[in-house]
Length: 298
Image (cartoon, rainbow, N blue to C red; front, side):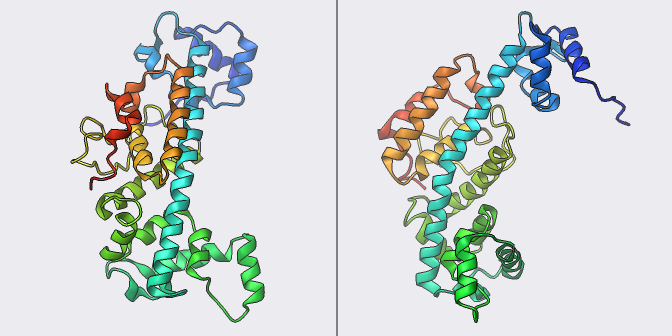
């Protein structure tokens, strides 16, 4: 099938929405919003207000759509806040474990990784990334240690992208993975590897302002089958990421602070259907019952 839809002016977009039953009380304000938020981006938030295709439920307003969009924007920022702390902890543990096990430049030796790991390609991309880096510590190292062609592992772990951090962890030998996953995060290395892959994906989604609400995750984290927390949770929705955040935040007061912000956000937007994010009926017990933590399970 050939795509034949013509582009619409902002005024035509408004008329199209009205023809589909959406209540718009102020056309000029609505046009100003569409000038700054792509119609196509906003259309993902139409779904809960439509019982049939291209027809809004009676009484649905443009404000309802914007309300849901604003919730999702704040949710993305909240998820990024939590994942930033986890990302820093992963980088720190990788740098520490590899430095003490294999030395300052041990990451350059493919023998220190599993044989299936494409160490050559990973290292090539890392070196290209470092060459383009404008980090102050990289420039300082280059100026001071002119005979060195590579950075120490603790600098590498700060300079590379989070996706490259995840690839590095996946390439470690099993006992090295376990030293980080079980030793620091109290999670089995197979589950942790899956979680790390998933949160890199989710972080990138949120960083690029892609929808988190009602998102079906393309990269699904492994469930902790021995954990009561995960018993009735779908692992293809954002709620599963909340459980990962709960288990990987290394300080209890961090989780308490972050989960409190999540609860406040949900309270500020009471009309949002949380089931579309994979929230089970007992989600409050799961997120806020400190005795129900799953960190001891693998």
